[in-house]
Amino acid sequence: MARHHILLSEQVTATIETQVSHGRYKDFSAALQDAAWNYFIGSPSPFAEYGVTPAEVEKSAQKDLAAIRHARASGKLKRFP
Image 1 (cartoon, rainbow, N blue to C red):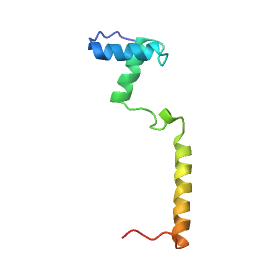
Image 2: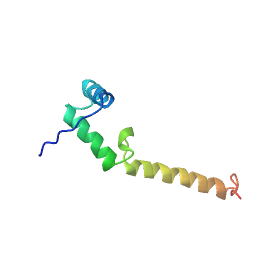
Image 3: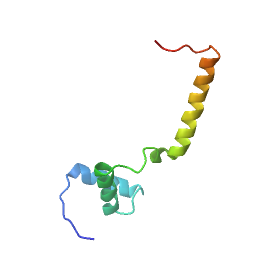
């Protein structure tokens, strides 16, 4: 891997060092690489932070939609104009 030398502001450096000291990252370069990846590329899944998979979220959404359809069919829920 090629080395790139960059200069960070004091606030950014302090934030990254805090993340490393709390054990979220193994070292400074891992924290910086993760931050750059998430900023430029994007996280692999918006649900990863909450510990659920996209399939689990979709299953829950389908269950909620089925309950809404059932309530609408039974007359408990009216269509919004």
